[in-house]
Length: 447
Image 1: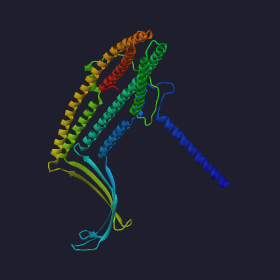
Image 2: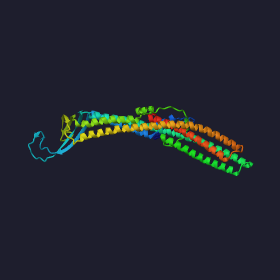
Image 3: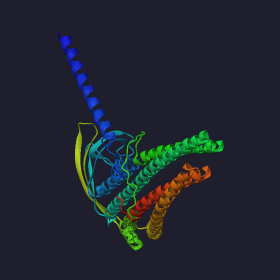
């Protein structure tokens, strides 16, 4: 009976553990990807939020920030006393010390004695002329620089997701255009076959229509493949480790916004994390120069020790207390201090030059994004008009062919022109959306 109870208890525990494992696994998998409910499209903000959660580049930068914060605490440790427990064992002679309470005269005694000692030691830096303070400042500014590096990576991830998102919308619309071309060529083929059977058109019209239909089918296959590649690119930009497909909100529209180049550049200089990062690195370098200068000055420290010593452990142990102070004054360091200062000053000049180069690159990026946005806005307007004209031309060509006065080449040219016009319009919309995203990235506002 007792064994049965024990077996039942074991089984109950195992069932509980299995249940907890399944619950935890289900919770983990539910948190793995937070996709919308079925039927609800995923918005751009949703994709950005998923990327900020799953992209491994952000986790890497976050770990760097945490490591840098730990270095700050390491630097702060110099402000606190250092306590160590020391134990030692020595086997030595006592020719010049008292032994057993009796002071020996100068002799050569080769008798070795076991000596044990144990006790805590406390050391405290009293004043180091700014060494610790500057070390702390260096690491704190490095934390700020690492945080801005994280912001830079965050903005890059956001821009990549935006481009990939618009790329999916673009390829999806191009699939629809390809499907329209397939439908149009199929309709044209049916008409050509009807005319041929009625004896009003030659066989070459049917052959030409069949070739056009086959080419349209090939274009549709390519468009579907491009759409699949665009989805994979978006998954990669988000940071998904497995292929996931989901509907998306179509925001590939045209809502022109006016930007001023001067405002873009000014905002970029004020908010770009790269600028804030190099400013933090310059402040860190200023502290590094001060730290190098402090090597010219002495260090004052205090120490205390409680020591138990004896010939046998744990018996025959006697205690002693030691208090002292140390002033370490550098007299000659082989020109190390002066060269350390020269090195840090050169590093500062390097950072100043890097800032100037960075501002030039940021201005170039801002100007390119601004000009691209202006160009793509004009392209949207022109291609939109071109689509209307190509649609009208296609309707006229199809009408002429239906009444028997048009040629197959005429309607084929009209189909190609309409498809190209729609593709150019979709490309212009994509370029405009990407240009806007790049302007926000150039200004440092896509956080």
